[in-house]
Figure 1 (spheres, helix red, strand yellow):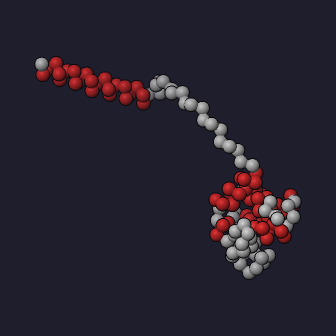
Figure 2 (cartoon, rainbow, N blue to C red):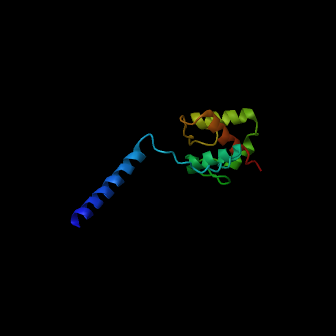
Figure 3 (cartoon, one colour):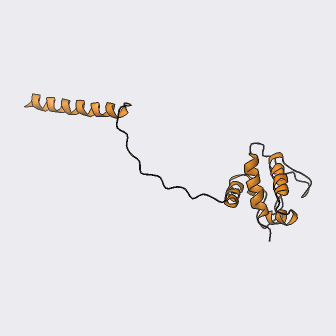
Length: 129
């Protein structure tokens, strides 16, 4: 009786270990995944807002309140929402700026792409009242 039980346990362990090897091999069957729902695409302004919120901008700026830097609404009031101004502000975001809004310089963001900086500038300029 003990021999039969020992053989049965051995076969069980052996058969379990074989299945584990089969799933690790490249010949294993591929599971079909449920199709992922497409993420809602953001509009360019929503993307710009998301980039602003994800960067360090909010440490110095708020939408409607002056902090270390000007409020975004102040920037939007000063600059017309044109492609030229969007490009100019995007450059200031990337290169940094000083003297326009006071003595405290705005930090440069050289790792930011021109495209993302333009999305951020577009968002800021969209806040014009």
